[in-house]
Image 1 (cartoon, rainbow, N blue to C red):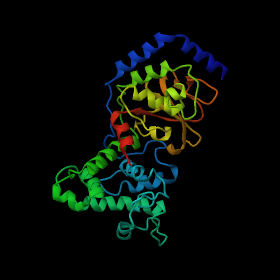
Image 2 (cartoon, rainbow, N blue to C red):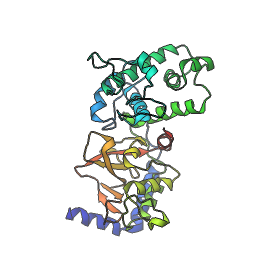
Image 3 (cartoon, helix red, strand yellow):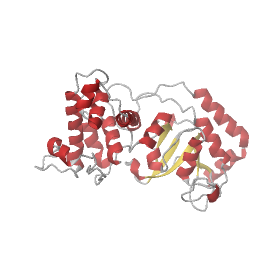
Image 4 (tube, one colour):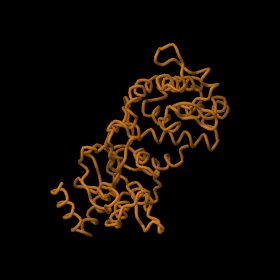
Length: 333
């Protein structure tokens, strides 16, 4: 710990030249990679799906060609945030948010216990995948992308997709399709090198300008708060300075893009920490990676915004923020 603090102080002491090196480095690597989910079998990103549901999503996400595990995970996140007890104002129920009439027709006994329970993810997740595949089959002759048409049918009804010859011109439906297909990338394990964020340099520059600022729980940097931040308030503000709107809390920020491996980190990536390394919903801390194994973060009450090492036992993973990924989160319902 003492050695780490000495290194951190040396990094801080290098001042402006350190910041410029980071920013120049980010610009040099920008645009030199290939991102996306890629072809072949789609795996799930580390911890993106709570461990209790990961095997179900991986299995049932391969039920038909119109879906994959990452897409199914994105649907469940969009519908309920993986909450098996979720209930909407429209009477949609469970982790997959089935309304009673749809469940009565399309619910399946996924675990073979002789019951179809909308509140049991062992039934609801298979039912969601099964219903997706039924819809895909129903609109299979409609022109366009089969997955887009399936998602549109899930939102607006298969008849509307058939009538319009594709995704209907309803703002809600078009947003639903775009949101889930964008979030899909954040739930998939990358199979190629990820594109660096073009806004990373600005986010780092903003975060560095706040070094030494005292931490404030719930802080978002407002004048009333004395310009102070908590961890996710800092990362949100840093990317807002680059015209990217992140969600407020760290565990939602994790889904704002794809997830590079530790050895693939670039300056500007968000880095996350958790006491449960199997579940992104349990993330409790976030910082902005600056290179050399260090991040800028707002660590805790009584501390200031500073450089800290990322290689700790509670390191969970990282996210390479994208504008589309962040927008999908902030517009999801």
